[in-house]
Length: 157
Image 1: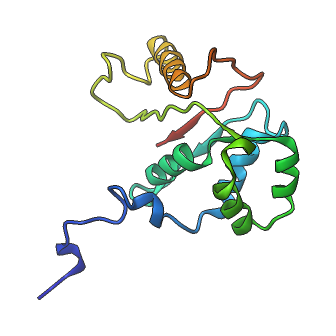
Image 2: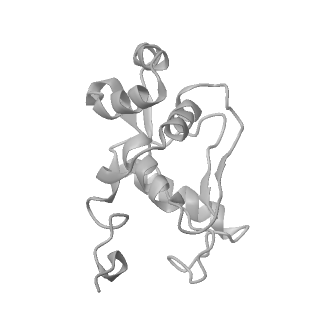
């Protein structure tokens, strides 16, 4: 007897996973607001929930498709749209209307050290994060990395 559980291919892993990611419009919009407005300054967006409900895939989606600092005039155009239309328009923006943001995904549940450092280490963790953000900024051809007045942390537990 055939069972869908017998399939080795997963729609939540691999190159097509982010293309099939859907139905989190309100949360994606909230994330974009954290990046593009001052109303959340000094606050942390914290995602939590039962294992297997898509937190990690959501974080990958936000990293690859949601970390965009949008020009003010463009933000005003997007702000009036409904959640789904907002997300679709954000994805379709021409490159000259937004700046991609440097991003580092941190897995605080990591037991084995990454680069010899546990991200949750109270001293080495922030230093590791700073180094990784600098690397991400260089990959985007940023000359320098300037931290905003607030810091934004994304974590999956």
